[in-house]
Image (cartoon, rainbow, N blue to C red; front, top):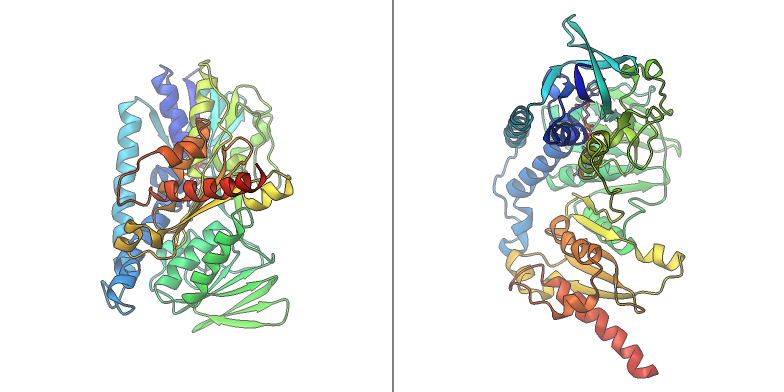
Length: 466
Ligand SMILES: Cc1cc2nc3c(=O)[nH]c(=O)nc-3n(C[C@H](O)[C@H](O)[C@H](O)COP(=O)(O)OP(=O)(O)OC[C@H]3O[C@@H](n4cnc5c(N)ncnc54)[C@H](O)[C@@H]3O)c2cc1C
């Protein structure tokens, strides 16, 4: 065999699998297209979108308007160049970091796309006609996904786009339709709304982000409507027409909505077409996803699959851990199964994050809970940063005082949630948060305020009933 472990794809899953295997002393090869080191995550997904969001927040001055007034802007005329300059800078740096990590750990990068020719052999084509056949004892498939593109829609990268081509828009549209209110659609809807684009979101279902706390989603909708976002729930797009000066989107209900740009965000498709899976004795479902067991092994024992190509939750964060765990298993290193507590972060404006269960889930499962709430506007840090809408909510078990869920909406939500995650993961109770001293003034203090709120409510019940 040429390699002990061969990894296909260098996104978070592949990258961490390759490095973990190399750290365990394996001879590792990694196949990836020359211009895609770091995967979708670094080049077209997480990193560019989160950098764009940061540029939008900074240049529009949005987060400072409570303090300096509604007309406050850092730059009057924000151009697409202002946004892409920051994105390309960060993407370039991140690609460098990954290249250096791979080379430091002795991972052999094989440029090109890999395709199985048998269960241990992969043909690598670099796109210029160069082919190379490599063999490996263990193989990790981490080929990720691409945006799903309905065949009836004529994508042209400028007026009808997806989350890949949004990064190469040549101007900020005045009006925009976002088809699909999933995480990616809503994140981009909120960024463009903050830039002043009039956004219409069209969603087939009657709700969006239904896995999140209902109150938090209501608060997000309120904020987005305040930024002139229109929601059309329960509506299906029947066609998009392109004209010289824009587009008209036609809904099944008969509505016609004009817009400069239409962005489709209607799910993603596993990148398995190119792999010739049957040559390895494997197959994918109709969304291109590969089935794995708890150790990320496919039906063929020595072939693993990790990251978005195995489906839910399809996050960079989980893909990394899956990659590490698969590599450890492949190299015979003892491994735990993936921790069931996984945070969800949604980088809308304002941002959302949570861990554990929602009120709706607990109610459905008939698990009693008490709610403790802390509002940023009652925290000194909330006043200092001008965030009056942020809120942190703890769901606490009145039976054993454990935390059942933590939901955060507002500045720093995706960072703050990890305090709750640590307490929950270590089996802590609400009393730990009541008794803890937090730095002051911080947003972290919201944990203590919410914990006091929950315990005060629980005490009221015992005062009445004892
Ligand atoms: C717009 C957007 C925003 C996102 N925001 C977030 C976020 O904020 N937080 C978060 O956690 N997640 C986010 N995600 C999801 C995150 O990007 C993915 O979960 C993550 O990138 C998946 O990692 P992966 O290891 O599956 O590989 P990917 O990053 O999907 O990369 C797969 C790589 O495999 C390569 N490849 C494909 N086929 C082959 C082949 N045959 N041979 C060799 N290489 C191949 C591709 O070139 C690609 O580079 C976002 C995604 C998008 C699209």
